[in-house]
Figure (cartoon, one colour):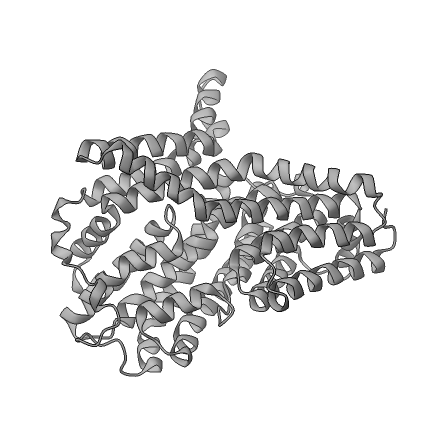
Length: 456
C-alpha cells in the first residue's frame, strides 16, 4: 500500500481532479464518476486487482446499510406532507402567529421546518405561490420574503438530519445524529439570520424592481387560491409530525445520560434510532395526514413510491462515496495524507470546510461536495479520538463549505431563477451571495464553538 505521503497526496489530488473532469467536462453521472475514480485511485495506489472490487463492495454496503433506509423513509414522509397540503398549512400558521412585521422570521422558520422532510426543489415549488401572494398583498418585492425562506431551506438541506447530505456525512464520519442536529442548529440558525434576514433588504435593492406582484409574474399560473387551504390539516399537527422523528432521535442520542435503568435506556435508544423514529413518523403521517383525512391507500402508496425515485439517486451517490472512503482507508492513503496535514498544522475543521467549498464551486452539487469531502476527511481522521460535539461541528463545517457560492453549475441556482423570475445576473447578486453568506457564517460559528469547547 501507499507509504509515501507525497505520493498519497498526489493520488488524491489526481482522483479529485478526475472526478471533477468526469462530472463537469465529460458530463458523466456522479454515481458512475465516483465509481470510476474509486478504481483509478485504487490502481494508482497499487491495490491488487482482486481486492479493488471487494473494497468498493464493502464501502458501498457499509454506507448503504444505514443511509438508504433513512433517506428512503425521509422521502416518503415528505411525500405524505406534500400530498396532504400540510406545508401550506404550516406556512399560514407561522405567518398568522408572526403577523406582518414578523413575516420574514416566520418564513425563515418555515423554510427550515419544510426542508427537513422535503427535498429543496419541492419545498420551493410549494412555497412559491405563497411568496407571490405575500408580495402582491404587501406591494413589496417577493425577494423580501423569498430570501429568508430560501436561507432557511438551504441551511436545513445541508446542516440538519434527517436530510440526505448530513445523514451521509454523519455516517461517513461516525458522528452521532443527535449531536449533528444540535450543532447544525447552533451553527445554522445564526447563518440564516445573517444570510436570510439581514441580507434580504440588500438583496431586494441589488435585484432592482423585479418580482413585484402583477399580471406578468412568472408564477401567476401557479398562484392558487391560498385561502382554499382550509381543507388542509392544521399547522400544529403538521409541525408535530415533522418534529416527532427529530424528538425521538434526540431522545435516543442522549438516552445514556438519562437517570433511568438499563432496560428503559435501551428501549429509548431503540425507539430513538433513526430507523425506528422515521418508521413511527411515517406511520403517524400516513394515518393522521392521509387515511383520517380521506386519502386513499392507493394515492398514499403511489406518492410514497414516487418519492423513492429522486431519493434513489442520492442513495447511490452516497454509497459510491462510501466506496471511495473504503478505498482510501484500505490503501492507507487517508492515513498518509493525515500525516501531511498534521505536520502542516492545518485544523481538521478548516480542512473540511475548504475541501467542501472547492468541490462545491467546481462541480455545483452540494450533495456530491458533502459526500466527497466527508470521504476524504473521514479517511484522515481518527474519529474515536474526537468527542461527539467535535464530530458534529465537523459535519457543520462540511455543510457550510458545500453551501457557499451556488452558481450556474448548480441546479438550485436555475430553480431559484426560474421560480422567482430572476435573470442570471440577478440570481448571482441575490441567491449566490446569500448561500455564500450562510455558508461562511455557519463555518465561523463552527470554528467559534470548536474553540470554546476545546478550552480556547
